[in-house]
Image 1 (spheres, rainbow, N blue to C red):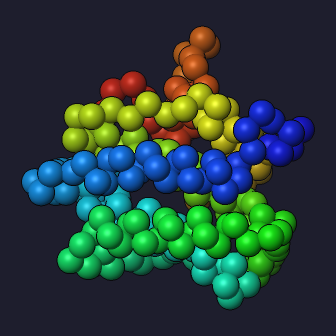
Image 2: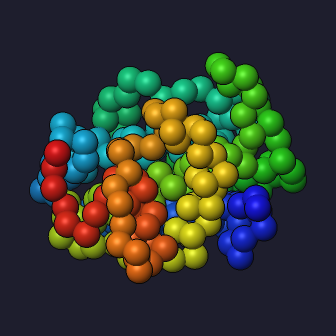
Length: 200
């Protein structure tokens, strides 16, 4: 079953909801919270927000150029003097790009072949959810990941199991959730996150 057959599509609305969770965290950060450690061990909140910005910029860029440019080395300096404004501008650009007719149906070029924009958006939804959670845990204001978005992301990654098993796709190694775990907990476990928070 495709992720498009589930109750929540990983579309522009899902991306907007996931980005809004990041936005709630970013806009509420105190000056001293930007330096708090997140994951991986050498990252802090500022680095995490920069990573989200660079990744989310792929959406508008891919739709404008027809290419997905991989995120390799990046520097938190890209956020400039106003990280909140930089994050907001990137998210708004992505949302606007996804309103173009047929945006999700497009296939763009990638270094390893073609890449579906719908898959890129699904990955960005996943990334926004987990990074919002990371920031929330770092600053002591836990984020509640919506179960419906989590379930849709789980379905997407189940459909892409070969890529997951090949490594290099998810932020961290998955961990085993409890048998009765909610979709949100199962999604976070897939992303290597558990109930506690430990910098490893």
